[in-house]
Length: 299
Image (cartoon, rainbow, N blue to C red):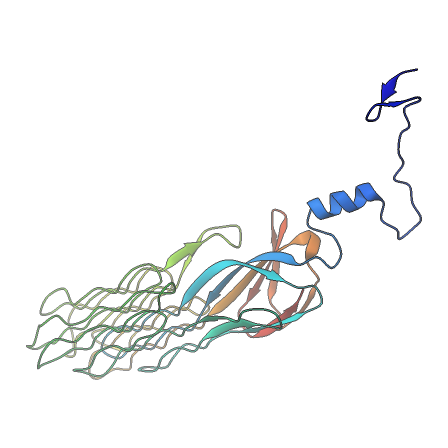
């Protein structure tokens, strides 16, 4: 006789996990829970939600609001994905949203627009750049806490050619006008590796001067449009939430770039049920859904 299995005296019995088809054995239950694949168990995902960028006028448009974190989804629940459009010249971008039953709605705020000469930039996800002014200081719009930075402004250059500020980005404030002839750059965006490689998005638009032919601000890294002192401002890059670039008095400001929503779902828990035709890729043990237009995902 020998002792084993917790001190039981007798022959050591080896338990079996062989069960009927469709029935979970106790070891299988343990392993499934440990691997987070137990049927009906909520699934933890990563997300990136970027709103549409604001449109430029004289200053640069602000980038769309940028949020990234984790969230728990309930199996069988459909979650609505809304992609915010970029704003036309002088118009704020639209919000991007994830919503669904049992979920605290995730809303990234559209980027703030720039304004016409003599006015401050609009507030938004990131703030729009303050416009050129012949009478005093203008300021950039404020950003939304946790989503983006403020725009830059004209800090007192009141003589021609009247420079403007750059739009704020997700990662950096838009620059003030550099001197009496040179406008501010857009603020830099923020990098994310949610897709498996590092990509920077949500840069602010560069500013421009009121009078033609003067140095303009560069767009912020991550899709911000450049200012243009001799033509129309450059649009923010689509599906980055970049702000539009500013322009001189005879041009049209660049439109903001549209937003994007990206979900990273453990492949073992990926349902395959979507609308809106997101691109579907994999990275390691996760399936990546990139929504460039509105749709849904059922967990």
